[in-house]
Length: 269
Image (cartoon, rainbow, N blue to C red; front, top):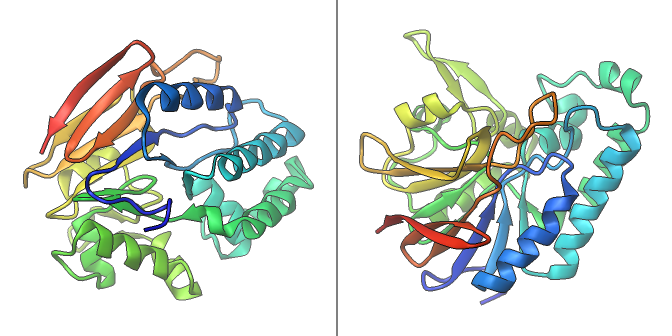
């Protein structure tokens, strides 16, 4: 087994959206020292905080990638921001010309970094009956694009990562569809927390970022599947903290919320 694969008995530290906050990296290191996870997983969106310059954005992203490579036990998931820079003109809601007027060099710089370090990034990862993506996976979306029902977390993560390898798959991953009833059907980069909780992929638990929360939390959906949210690092446009910088720790079938001075059980399988 490689160091980037997990058995059910191993543990993973799950970290929310950084958005250029490289000052959080020492805190992750501190949590690793205190709680000794087998591996660290960041759920995406490493760029584009409020009022960050082009140079600072690129430097922050470089710092995250180098930190991940130097630690050697880190997996970085793509967020919707990384997807935009990676795909550029393939990304349906990303206007490269408009961004280039604001930050002339940044799209090319970030695109190059993403492609050069593709081995560090994934769309999805898993441990036991938990799957990790940036925003989450709904049953409505998987049904709409023809993904098989009833998969394990591992097999679904493998399928999502495989989709990223083709243009058709990347198009499906970023899709936002409309149901016959007029409801939004969003993929794992765009789904809202309300849509995810209403129609989660049935039979597996999920841990996601994307939706800012005050503290890490775990909610039981209608089919008894658990949805954990960990985007606690955000700032509002005035620089105020939106969350408490807590992170998730999955040890076997037990999910914890951790901060520096305590470890609180959120769910026991």
